[in-house]
Image (cartoon, rainbow, N blue to C red; front, side):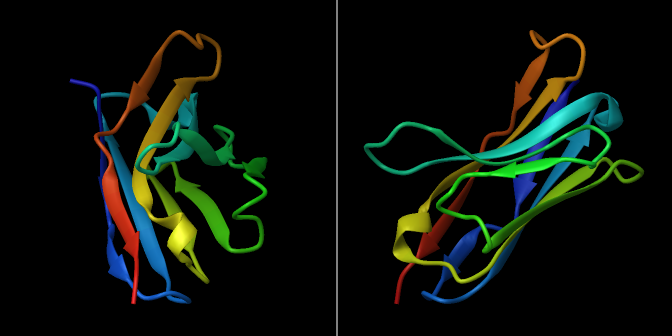
Length: 119
């Protein structure tokens, strides 16, 4: 069964840091581009960070550039999102996403992990 499971969310104070992890099972992570999306209450889901299958290229939403870093370990079938200098606007459910490099119709979503930034 193909599955993505996020972990690492929680409550953090403004200015703090969190590290999200995504563990993949049932498929070969190295054959997939990966991303982190987020959805805040009342807002549409948005792409936060994206990394290619080899890890050679990354993209970030303007709102997180310089604060968030996406990385992957294909040997461990994991993807991480390091989030620094968090603020209240980062509060959202964060979702892990995988898309096959050749067959874009093959895509998978995790169930999400809640990140709340509040004092």
